[in-house]
Length: 180
Length: 159
Image (spheres, rainbow over the protein chains, first blue to last red):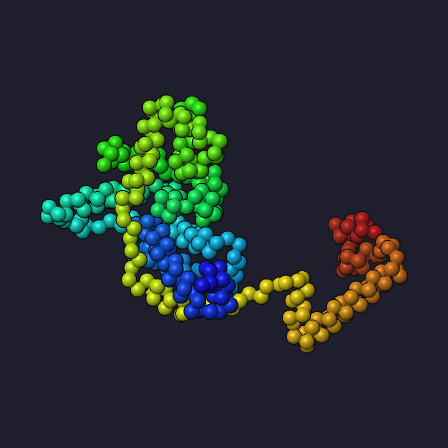
């Protein structure tokens, strides 16, 4: 089976069907990074789709100097950060979803509340810090790959993560102190 | 290792990005310092907490929607890659190559001719001759100026 780089070279030569293989292999990564970062499914779908369109447009110029995955992270993170900076907060009068009071749902509710707290805490981070946190904690990238994806130095990654964690510790102090 | 240095290194240690040489010192400090151990545990707990949220699934039909857009957009034409500097010349059509060569020859010939002409006349500075001020500045219409008038004074100075 051809690797990603070989497929991209085929796409660059005009093989649009080969691009489908790239989409199928990497849709999960692209969508999840976008969703974790943007926190909204519709926005994440747009960002991930745009990322694949950018990759397609760049295919004729593609040079496999780094892994395709690094290239994908770079495109997705750049698009997400741009999108986040342009986004404005949306205020709505709609009431929040009513809590489910069934006994079997209590554990799910706790997990869901915790997930909401985490999401709110992530929302307080500046775009660069948030992307570094997403790539580190959710994608499991090391500093070198985060640096390559965000086009910054490893030292800058270290600083972004340190600031991001400090902020998150403040925001989630209650949950962290409680230890559950 | 002291606490200040540990706090600086704690995140990097947690991310397993610490150089091997420092790891032993950090571990030794963690064993002896309760405060740093507590801070370190908090950071570790944060990692666990962040991963509380389950990974969301890709929406149904995502790949299909991407491919629909991809087929509409199409792939741009491949950009020719230059393998050697003069490759562009050999990729030109023959008539274009002849026209370009002819223009180059004409340009060089004209340049040589102009260079030869300058060489013949030497590098002498242009000779400045004193010309008739009246003609040079087209002041002849002031010729009939009455004696003592401003125009007459101007003509005297000009001469």
